Length: 233
Length: 233
DNA sequence: TGCATATTTCTTGTCGACAAATTAAATACA
DNA sequence: TGTATTTAATTTGTCGACAAGAAATATGCA
Image (cartoon, rainbow over all chains, first blue to last red; front, side, top):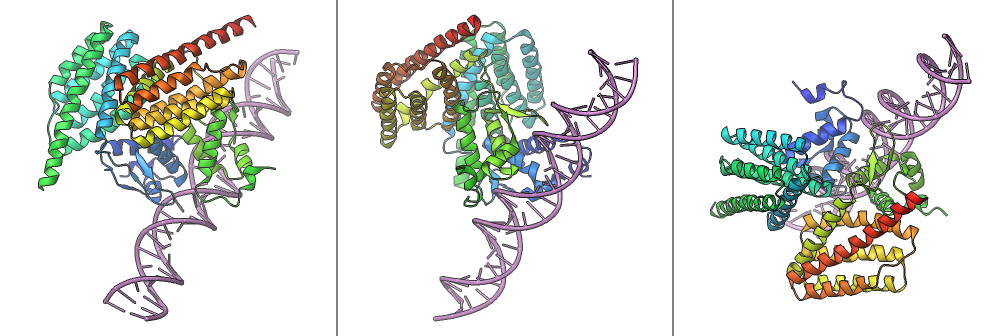
């Protein structure tokens, strides 16, 4: 049965846009809507059982975060992943890993660590059960929780955007190779969390940097592999 | 005569939102719409001679950049400047100054420097003629141009947001004290541009850091002065 | 048949109107 | 007179419809 349209009449006023936004956002980040997919407003309005107005509002927000591209008077589609400038992405990602982790060591409160540890446990479970999608999303959630413990919303919001973008890239990877993130990441997370708890800003920053560079080098490797596949096929 | 409504009929389809967005954005950043100002959709639709739909789209975009706050089903207003967490702002600003300047030294192309130098000339003029508003906006434009020469859109977009926020803070300052930015900033800009041109990443980063910290300490001083005024009055 | 132009179809952008939520005002009651 | 409840007014969120632009299709002509 069609869950989404069935909610048509029970929906609270103003909640529609958020629902559409959240669902589309997840579908884009999980590559259910791969880059380049056309976004049709009337189709979406039928699917969600609402008029085009709230749909458009959700699309404007998605466009604001760079998740979709809108050509005036023409089609709008899921934005491409910019493989050419990937190094820019990695630069920004590594820096934000470092900064947010360092700030977390400096500014966190006890209750922040509870959240972080819970997410780390979730991540460990995902790794244990080799659930790739869960790894990707809980990893992002974990690092975002660390960033939030750092209490600088400017960094947190950029980092959040970067982690989202990363979800798409990683998802692309796990789609082709049903590989698993090295167990090592779990240990690295533990070390980082310990450094944060000890309020050792310097160590936290260094570990975050190594962790980030570790991830980047992993992703770089698989990107090269992908490229080779493209060429040989 | 009323320029805005007079354009009603000659407007190109799709351009309305951008006009509204740009105008409101400038009015917010120049404090013509001070923090807390109520934003009324019907009033705006009358002012700009268009229906509420494009107005709302512009407002959604402004909300996405944190320039206005929207309470569901209730009023929407210009967002407050968060003086309590100002240190977060300064942290982010200094880091972005450093990173973008360093990247500019590394990645700039000759044509980038032409733009930068032109803006620096504009800034020098503004300082010379003691035009506070022009100083604020050309200073922001100059540093944004440097950031763009660094060619990392993740950093550039965060930096742009920070510089905008800074426009509001500085504007607030110049409103109370018709002071002028020290001439020293012009010289510091020259040094930074020279380091970029020489592709000396290390020097560029250090100069940018000093420049940024210089600005921050200036702003900090005046914030304290403001606070004292608040208390004594 | 091949190309340029005209027509149709489709999608987006804008509009005016209505309904829900909230606030302000008015009325009732102690 | 002060407070609680109802009613009215205001403002936001959503809708269906229409118009403009662009793409697809059809038509005219060499």
